[in-house]
Length: 190
Image (cartoon, rainbow, N blue to C red; front, side, top):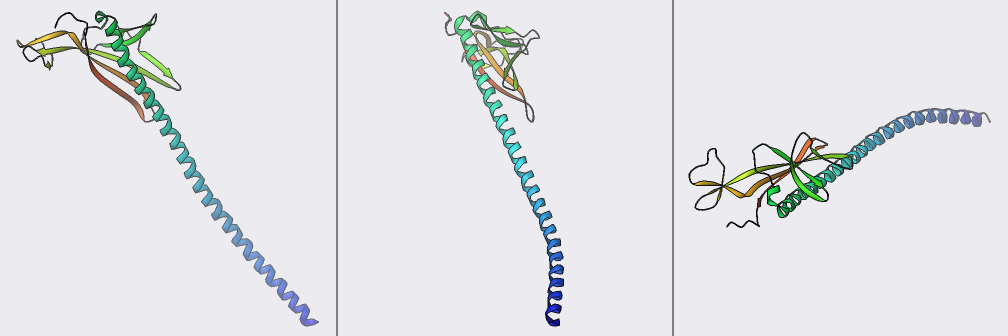
């Protein structure tokens, strides 16, 4: 019986010793698990945040492209309505597109920018108008110089327009531009 009691004491002591060792390793395992989970969770959150940022930037770029195309089309509508409404070009002078009574006009920018709010973003659309010069013989477009060369003339029926859309993006200011020629299609001169 003594043997049995000694055996029971020894096994209880071994079990207690074994339990304390397992409890220590369990704590280490939990700490390692929490650390791994924290790293994975931080990576997933950063990835999701980047996804949202890039998605927003893509929406802003798409909206700016739409506003740019709209500006080009509105300029053509002004031309189609009345060529005299398309201002003569003065390098560096800025204009804006403005709707009045359902009709679009190209107006001189007198301190009031054309600000368009779409969602959380603010877009600014600006128009530049430049004169167009041509070569007398070939009628090719040449740069206008002051004064005009003897073999050049100012084409009163053509203007170079540049429409620009700017907005504050995630990585600073962003912009898109489109330059195109407007020609007075209804001119009686050839």
